[in-house]
Length: 412
Image (cartoon, rainbow, N blue to C red; front, side, top):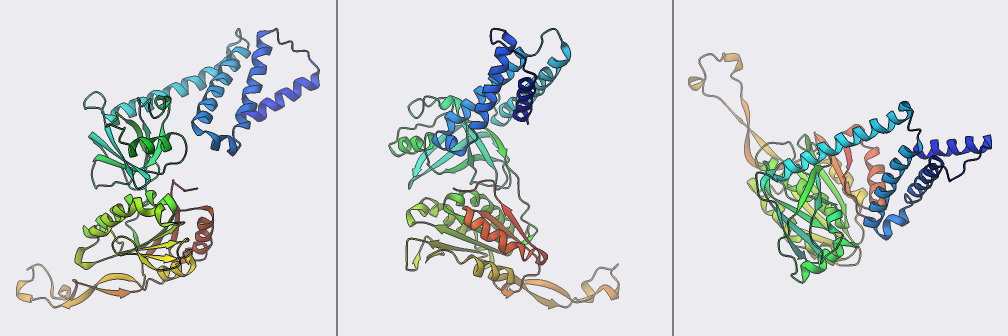
């Protein structure tokens, strides 16, 4: 909008054929505003972000500050009304910045607790970060934090100017004093972080963070949950797996079926997450429930092989249409059987009338297959092709109580 208004402003001046010598400070700063806005628009082209995101981000911020300052210098200093817009915008920005700083200080417990430290390790080609947070922080499933490492010059001299959003893979019903992150090494900072972690150069650096950010998904009301993942999108689902299984074990939710479908290009891409998936499978043992099914589909293999505990690797791309229809039918949902138990009238409450003393249904603890009679949730963190397929599949079953959620993190 600001760029469009600037273009209109320039066209009006050009049409009026007014001379605007750059020797006049107001005209000079007007040219700076136009140039800064033009560069900001140019930087929105994806290729500039891919070359170096950190450089792109700092350049974007510098141009934004230059635009605001030049606009302030361009406006007439003797007229209060035009400057009021700048002062109001600056005031709102300052208030929001102050609120954010207060929240960061409070959530990191800077003045009452020791600063958080991180244990950074190489996890089979991925980066595993464990933050020891003495204050404790409530983080819901599917949320992320912006991590800031104030001083790590041997990894990156500019680390004190960088914050990075990472998905939180840990979950507990209360506050977390150990926050776990599972990071995909790409370019720049994360690639260097993996290198130094693999060589043992990192010794519990001090870290700070903002957040948690992102929306929390209410999963308890769904009877079945289908998670569709590709590549490193598994990081967005690990905390949700823990929450769903905890809810089933504690009888806090309706979920009776969880299926995780993971598409991988090669087996090495998934080795780092095996231990996290095995931990989730270890928790899925109440009443021999086994409500969690993990199927991994490997594009580079042509044979069926085991993968960790209770997970099978299938060759080729995942047959998403067939899998989706299986889950919609509810044929694999496990629910407790009901037994009819009569009541002893002598032990009934004195105030209970005879009409209310009817046979009751109680859970036997045994499970049986049934059809789906509740709602179904489809959670996706995958590439463009997978997201397009799942949108098309869910669209035809919305009336059957099927919902689709695309998580905050989507792998490239």
